[in-house]
Amino acid sequence: MHLVIFLLIFCQVHAQIDWVNFNTSNSNIPYNKIKSIEFGSSLNSNGDIFVGTAYGLGVLNIDNANLPNNNWTTFYEETNPNIGLIGNDIINIQKNINGDVWICTTNGISILNYNFSLGELTYANWSYLNTNNSEIPSNMTQTILFEDTGKIWIGTTAGLAIIENNIWDIQTFETEGIFSNNIKKIIQKPDTPDIYIGTLNGGFYSWDGDTFNYWNNTNSGLIDNTINDFVFDSVSNLIIASPSAGLEVHTSSNNWILLNSTTNPELPYFINSLQNMVIDNNNNLWISTMENGLIRYKDANWTFYNEENSGLPDNKINCLKYDELFNLLWMGTETEGVVMLDLNQESISINETLEKNNFNPYFRKNSLEINYSEKGIITIYNSAGNLMLQYNTQHNIESIPIREFKPGCYIIQFQTRNQTISKLVIKNN
Image (tube, rainbow, N blue to C red; front, top):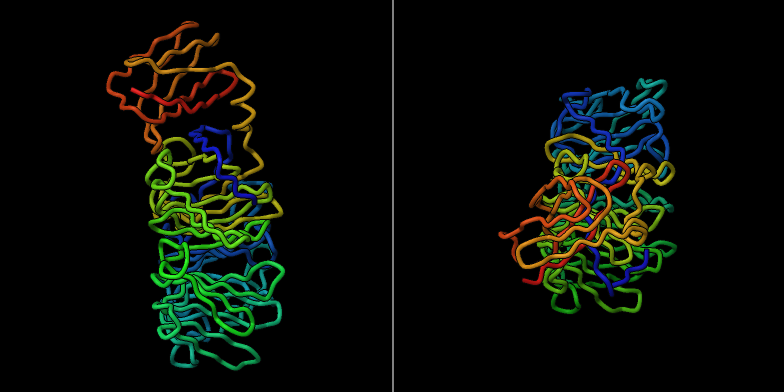
């Protein structure tokens, strides 16, 4: 993914995307608060999908050809962690290089070696790690990285644990310039051995095979020391999602770029509070906000999806998982279960629509002027994604009163029988 910073275009759209929702009302998912999603026996979502909730584990065996038909297997805490789940409150789920599923709970890690056949669990072998039977520094593991070499990096709320050849190495960082042992995310830079570790309130650090290096707001261009998520794009820029500074980008040329409402006042305020990120096959960066829905970013174009303008049932998204083979985006929400977004079904190309029509609304002081040959529905959103006005047009020329609108950026959406057009229009006075 290439980050281009020269032009900002905002689009609020009712694009024809296929949204599928699994919740306790329409499925056997154990709970609607979703914290983690991991694919099971395959590298994609064609098969069993592990869904970690705040109360139990659900395994979805999905039939992609017959959505939303689905079968669920559920697991809850067992008294003996050698025969089942060690805790109900699941923080994170990740699969190792052998296909074993590591289920991180508030009571420790359950490790499941299993086999599913025809939607049923035919074999299960459970083991576990916690502070009672291992050197792990905390029972609460938030992130794990499995290297191809077999080396395991475990990020907990109390430090970093590294397992290599069954030998444990515990790292804490107060004396190394990073004043947080609360590890939130661990990733590996593609095609290199370099490991990057993001923390809560302590910036991030990397391991180059010999030493740890660190970046925080005292020695770099990083503004927010909390790393909610980070990912490398196709040209080795490190993109960071932060809870208060928006997108922070450490470029491959060792520069820093900030994308938030301070550096770009045209952006809505919620762009500052970001949660998770994935990059899809078309180099779109998909970002979950803390409380304001989903964002798609590409080539300086921003598209915002929320409860009002799309099939997204909950604006608070806790986790993202991308299926590279089928081009599906899976989301875990705070109150509405799991959402699957089929990225193959979007029928409106925002850039093409804006270029290929002659819909050109403009503001006067107290009105919005429309000059278009078709009848339809005008919907106006402000830059924060809030619905401001809907209006049915009946004539070729319409003047829509907007006396209460303040100066700023607005998305004007025109929906006809045949198409939906969205335009960014600035009101100056």
